[in-house]
Each structure stands twice: as structure tokens, then as C-alpha cells.
Length: 418
Image (cartoon, rainbow, N blue to C red; front, side):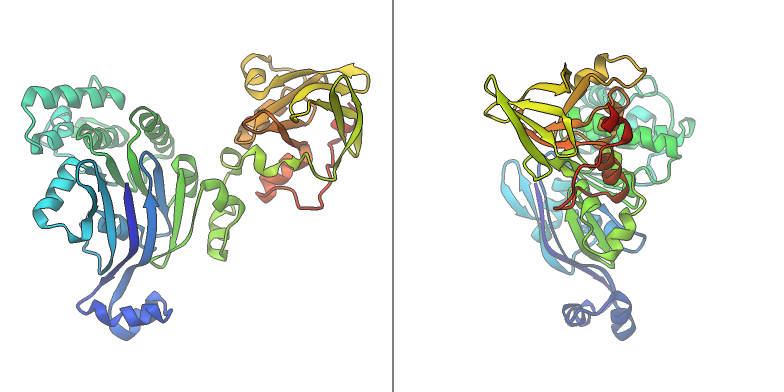
């Protein structure tokens, strides 16, 4: 949808004097001291795929807001190219569009949501939402009908005749989001849209955005300095430092494998339970920590080396068919089934739970309140790929990484005694 190649933005009267110093690896402060030019963005490349939420984050002054303004040329890039996949004309180089074609691109295909709402105080909420459609030349009845639909989507269906001054900050931000959605633009550029909101309202807006994204499937470039926000809403995250992208990846990638000390400090206090997945921390089922105990009735019974009384019966495809604790046959259920139907109470010692590899740890933790036994992890074909006992779960939360190559399962006391 959008592809950035080597985007650079330098502020100052002689930006060309800074380029050789940037290529030589000098930092922002050195370049400013020597040339008087300020590096906003330096050689940034990324691809924003259709329908994804791509988050750019960093501390104040890292270049993230400058970058998003280069994407729609509110700032003219000093160097590099920005490509947009137009539905009718194919790939366009935004950096080379005429002013008229750029206006058309912004009018029909690219909307922006700002941090400070930017609502017209003299217009009603409905007319604020309909403003982009008015610019497009849509008839009044049509734009009001569509604006009303967007207000319903953001939970403000009854507020169309009110004015911005009558709304709370969170409600005003919903109006700004509805206005951006109303134009049917394929790309939303969101520059720290929730940063001015109170924490609870901010969380509600994040959830609202995820819900709307599921319904509409827009392509979103989202700027934030809040790591938890980035982890919560982003499909991919680019972390910026001094104008450069220092790491780009999925939220789990960045949390588990920070590549620089700067990124490591960023993620140090992040909540991993909604990001890290079961497949990442599970002890591999094909490792030396497990052995085959017996075979019968077409099943191979496997056990962890230090908890041999808990055995897993697998078919020839590696799918779980049976489980036993000593001579007791266990009930086998999916995590989803357990959370949907199992009543809260004492943790059961006769219930074995399994979950897909992509299940986040928060869900695994919830399931662990219902059973005292380790959780098995399966792939898309249903084959058992790993096991999570309590030490593995704690390790994943505290250390934000999976098992080391030579790790052995260390069951919790209640597991070992079950």
C-alpha cells in the first residue's frame, strides 16, 4: 500500500551540507554543530501492507512525527521516495506528484488524524464528520447519511447535532476518527491521536480502533511514544532513534529480541502477557527433555524426563489422542473450551489443556487458573509442538524469551505432586 525508500528530511537552509556527514555516520548533534542543519529523518525504509496497522514509535525528537508528515508531503522529503499503490493508476511516487495530484491523493485516498482533534468549533459534530465529504463535493444528504453511519460506528450516534465544546476530550477524538473514516480513504495517518487523553479513555479508544479496524480493514500508519499502545494495536512496529529506524518487526519480535540497548531499555518494563505467544516460550516437544515411554493401540506415549507419570499419547501425525497421569485417564480440552465453560474454583488435577502456538500468554495464564497440569501447544495441523509448565510460563513473563537450547522442564511443586 505504502513503500518508503531511503526517506530523509533535513531542516535548514542548506540541507545538502548535512548529507555527506550523515553518510559518514555522524549523529544529529554533530551535524547540527557543524552545519547548522537539523536532521529530522535519516534514510528510513519500510513497507506498509494493505489492511495492517503499522506503528512508528520513539521518544520525543526521534523523528516519528516528521516521518509521517513526509508520507503525505506536509513536509517535503530532502531525499528518498514514497510510493503509494493507487487503486486505478498503480504505484505512484508521492515525492514526484504535482500539487494538484497531491491534493487529490489527500482528498480521496489518505486521511490524517491529529493529536489535538482539530475540530471546527462553529460546526456541529455531524458537519465536522462530513467535512471531508463536503470537500469531495458530495451532496449534503449523502454526506450527512454517511457521516451519521461513522458516528454510529464510534459510539456517538446521538451527538450529531451537538458542538465540539459540548463533548469531552475522548468524544472529540472519536469525532476526529469518524471524520477520517468518513472519506473512505484507504490509508489513515494517525499522529499520536490518543496521547492527550486520560489513561482509561485512551485504552477505550485503542479498543475502539481495533474494533473498527476489524470491521473496515483500513491501512493505518500510527505514531506513538507509548510502547504498550504500540504493542496493543500494531501488526508491525518501527522504533526510531535520532531520525533512524533502529528496529522493525512484530511486537513479539521486538519484545523478545531487542537488537540495541536503546530498544532493550524501551521494552524493559513492557507487559509481555498480551504480546508473547505460547509457541515462543514452550519447551519443544521434540527436544531431549522428552522421551518415548511406550507404544500401544497405535499411540506413542511421551513423557517429560522429570515427570514420567504424566504421559501424552500421540498418533503417527503427532496429534494428542490421550493423556494419563499414572493410571488415571485425563480429560483433554482446548484452552478456549476451558475458558468458556470451566467454572472458577480449585485448579483441577484431571484436566489437560492445549492451545494454538499463537495464543498470547495472558490467555494461557487464565487457563492456568483452571488446571494444575502443564499446557500443551499445537500447530495449525493440531500436532503437539511444545509444553508450558509453570517455570516456563514465569520465565517467559519475567525474561521475555523462550527456553534455552539445553533447558529442561522444571515443574512446579503442585505439578510434580499431582
